[in-house]
Image 1 (cartoon, rainbow, N blue to C red):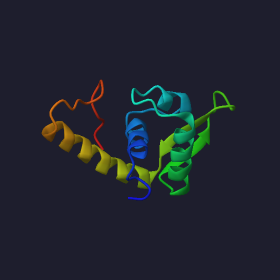
Image 2 (tube, one colour):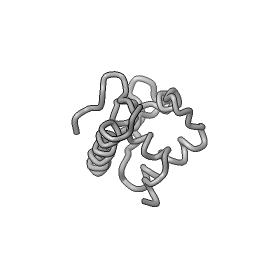
Image 3 (cartoon, rainbow, N blue to C red):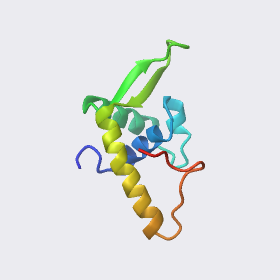
Amino acid sequence: MDLVGDRWTLLVVRDLLLGKTFFDEFLESEEGIATNILSARLRALISAGLVEKVLDEGDRRRSRYGLTGRGRKLGRLVLSVAEWGLANIPGTRSPAGGFPTA
């Protein structure tokens, strides 16, 4: 829970599951994560072996982020929590296009 028990980390994992890969794409999420918080959460997820950072082949000045195998296992849990929220919390909505299947 120390690693994933805060709002921002779970939202970063959610965004990775939804296909976001670049830093600026995470910043576009409607929750409005600050750049310093996003950087810290990505570093923590990388250190924990849940996210990998790879230089973008198309633009070597940018990096792509993606879930590792362990991160995808966490993703299944995040999707389960999202499904529970959709079923049990009035007003909860899924993202455009829905959630991917894990």
